[in-house]
Amino acid sequence: MGWETRNGKKVYYRKLRGASGRVRSIYCGSGERGELAAREDAERRSTRGGVGNSPHKKRRAPTISQPKMQHTAHQKTSSRLARA
Figure 1 (cartoon, helix red, strand yellow):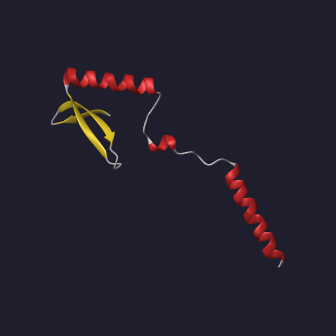
Figure 2 (tube, rainbow, N blue to C red):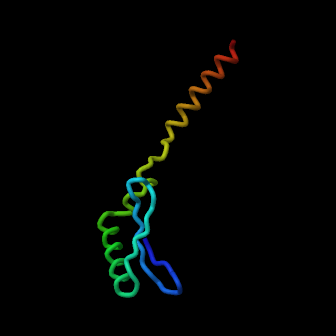
Figure 3 (cartoon, rainbow, N blue to C red):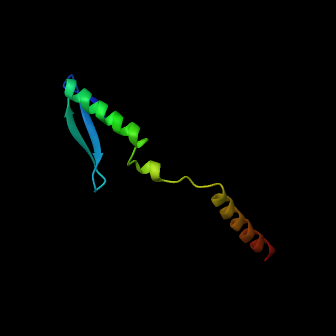
């Protein structure tokens, strides 16, 4: 979401992701209409607590124990091969 300059004029667009995953730009207006849409969007974001439908927000970072477990399994396999 945000302000863009088109043909030397500031206009406000909403960015929405459709069911297909593609981002669409929705023209909201310039001047007072654009300001109103920008305020509505800012209010909506503040009440919802963040970015919203961002796929990055939903993705979990790997925990430290996952790589350690993989490393430990690799060490055990290496030790068995070295003994053979």
